[in-house]
Image (cartoon, rainbow, N blue to C red; front, side, top):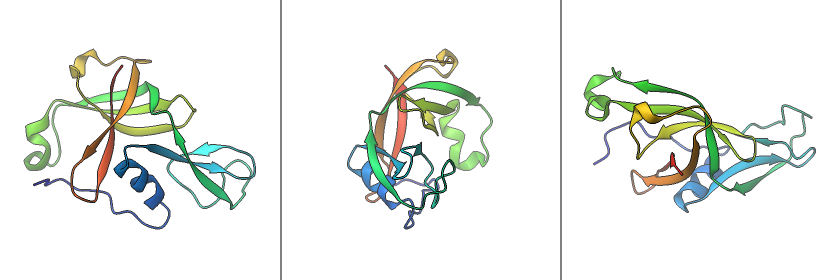
Length: 134
């Protein structure tokens, strides 16, 4: 049983979480100027257009920034997982997203390290995107 907090999809984020359940990474794309964005927003921050669509992206990217968590809060929930990496990943399409880096020594993570998306079905309805080194 998964005992950690999980996202609660709403009307704005459901397309993202639905894609994750299907093993795809998807981002919002402005219908006016083509700018990609994540997290989703109702209006494009570049041209203020209210129209957008969801587009699948490659899931490839690089580590932009990261931290190694060694003292989790709350400790009773995350303590068994330390150390773990929380990173800002820059996707090949230019969008940045926060996630975990898995399947490697946390101290081996470096800036510009190539990573790819993987999907962790933590409950029957929630699948989390994570990244691993390529």
